[in-house]
Image (cartoon, rainbow, N blue to C red; front, top):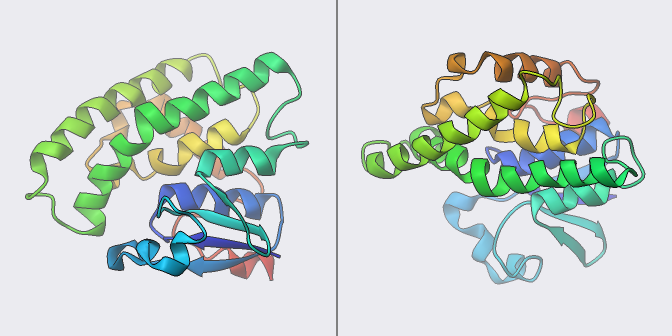
Length: 207
């Protein structure tokens, strides 16, 4: 059985909890507390020398890291990815966009405001990331004016990656009412089979 090392509030970890659940792949969930710096303990660094979660152990002492890379690994040979070269390129494009133009700009304000509740201390950085994050959300909003999902008019790992932090962006001070296409897309993502919330314990769904 797979073993997923996860920090529960993390959108990057949620991507994998969600996708494994939707694939109906059983897994053991191991919570790791970033606030206590557990990812920098020697036993964790043996799993990921970069000291980050998520980490997916696919067999004894074989560990996968980097959330979007793991999504690709899990999606191979499924309809959540693609065998078509152009579609694959488009999915990868959005995965890169999520990591470099969106994820940190949504996750960091959320972490400071909601997780550690230090909004005043980090106010200048929050404003900086919100400016960049709103630009990224604008790119998504524009794309969704003519698309139901991000690639191929179907639900793929591109949607999973982008949804992970976007749907909780309000916890980082974002106003998603300014992005009606994104709100409608979030509803479509939430209607997919075997969807779980970010605060939901997926283990109970897998038995």
